[in-house]
Amino acid sequence: MKHTGFEIEHCRPNCPKSSRNWHNLYEELTANLTSLNLYQTIEDKFHPVLHHHIPKICLAGCPNGCSHPNIKDFGISGYVTPQITDVPCIECNKCVLSCQEMAITWGPSGIVIDQTRCLSCGDCQRVCPSGTLTAGESGWTLRLGGRVGRHPQFAKLVGQVQTDEEVLTWVSDTITRYIENGQPQERLTHFLER
Ligand code: SF4
Ligand code: SF4
Ligand code: SF4
Image (cartoon, rainbow, N blue to C red; front, side, top):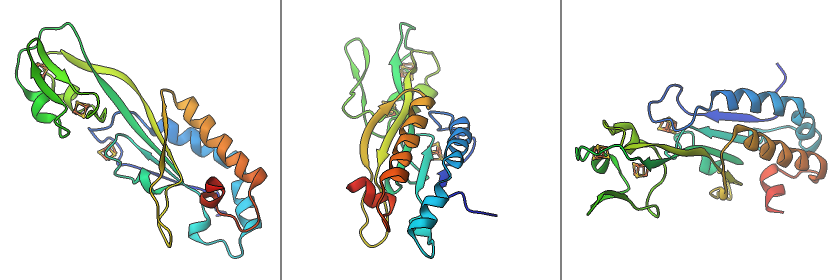
């Protein structure tokens, strides 16, 4: 079977820690990138085509990043920000204990979330039995330019978006620019640097 010219790695299906459902995005990314016929570009640039020539995309359901978004050309990780509601807190302390970042403490009026420490992983709202904590804004954190190999580097943070459509546009536009403007023998990672 002919290679598609890209690889999409994703994290474990049905993981209870997932902040965003990545399944639809995976299907749509696959369809979009297949339609761009990226393999033709890769084949024109490299003889033979080796594994490190193929652009890599990572989809992770939450900031834990088990599928390694930090070392892929495109790193896409789900996030969900906790929101404190008006529902009375029963002071069970579960949210405080659940937070690995120690972002939740007790204040005079109840729990306080330190936004500078919070990674929007969603653990606290999942353990809250009362509904005092619920899911707030959710979306995708985008990173670009990660790689392993001779000159490894972590992907750089690009920003956050809230919809799958914005992720699709970002990936498609970037790949299209690579197809149209990449130089001979230039890998995507080096094109992104340039
Ligand atoms: S990245 Fe998050 S959702 Fe994906 S497998 Fe790891 S813990 Fe689960
Ligand atoms: S979302 Fe995660 S990091 Fe943020 S306060 Fe809740 S448990 Fe802590
Ligand atoms: S988990 Fe919910 S009910 Fe328990 S202390 Fe935290 S906010 Fe209050």
